[in-house]
Image (cartoon, one colour):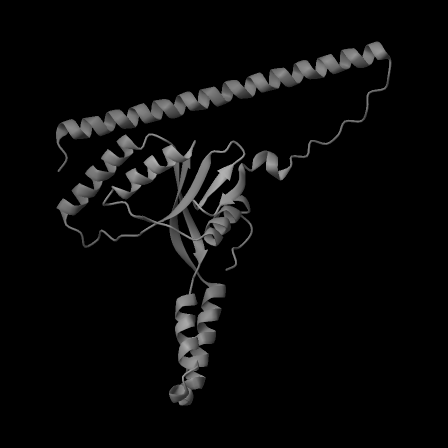
Length: 231
C-alpha cells in the first residue's frame, strides 16, 4: 500500500496540475481577448482610410480557413518514423498494450500505481491518450488461409478454407476493436529520444510501434470524426 506521505505527495501533484490547467485556461482567455481587440482596431483603421479616400469599401471576403492553417503536420519522416510539424517539432503515435488486472494481485496493482506515479512525475511534457474503435485486422489469418489454399494436399478442404477466408474479409469490413494509442510531442529529436527512454523504462505502461499507414489512419479519424477508417 502507498504510505501516507506518498498519498499526500500524489494529492499535491494533482493540485499543482489542476492549477496549471487553470492558468493555461486564463492565458487562452487573455489571448482571445487581445485578438478581438486587435481585430477591432484593424477594422477601425480600415474605416478611417476608406472615409478619407471617399471610396466605397470593397466587399468583405469570406474567412475561409485552409487546411494547412489549422493542421500542424507537414510530413512524415520515414527514417525516424515520426511526423514533423510546421514548426519542425515532432509528433508521434504508439499503441498502448492492453493488460487485464482482474486476476492481478494487490501487490501488482500497487506497484503499477507507484510506477505510473513516478512516470508522471518525470514525464513533464504534454501527451495525449486516444481511445478509438479501429477496424479489426485479420490480415495475418487471411495470409495463413491463402497459404493453405495453395497446398495440393488440402484441395478437398478448399471450399471450407475459402468460406473461412470470406468470413475473415467480411469481419474486417464490418467490425471494430477498441484500441488505445499514445500521442507524444517533442520540440526536437533530443527531447523526443528522452521521452522514448522514459516510456521504455516503465514496466507497467507498455507502448508498441505502429506502421505509418496506421498512424495516418488515426490522424484522419481524429480530424474527420464522421468518416470511417477503411483498411
